[in-house]
Image 1 (cartoon, rainbow, N blue to C red):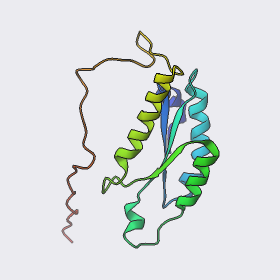
Image 2 (cartoon, rainbow, N blue to C red; image 1 turned 60 degrees about the vertical axis):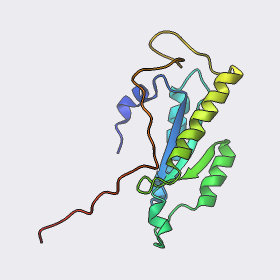
Image 3 (cartoon, rainbow, N blue to C red; image 1 turned 180 degrees about the vertical axis):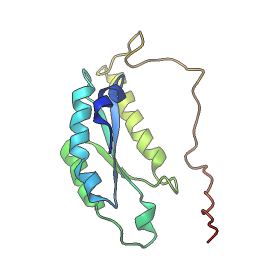
Image 4 (tube, one colour; image 1 turned 90 degrees about the horizontal axis):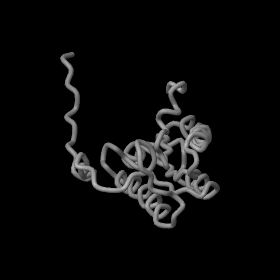
Length: 151
């Protein structure tokens, strides 16, 4: 599992979190409230932005009946907590960009409204261009070749 002794350092300088669960593993979805409460506790003084992300959509879209968490359950959780929900596939790239766009757009809206403030120094939300930034096209991926075995 995850080393919870260093959890706080992962949240430093954050204003949002992707709450990711595996749609083929019920236990991962059932654990989402724990991760959400951890994030709320450590992402202070801000009210964090969350996006609920179900992953491995490709495993249920190919006709296999591996789904353990329904899309309706996720949407109900999202509605109860006022958070955006999306199902994704890292394998096909489906909705990955949408998940990141949703969280960044909500953070941007909170900055524009004044709820989040830009800060100077090493921590907090920064403004301006970083010459180290890069653009990623989530729809341009290379299909991995299947593993080969000798026997």
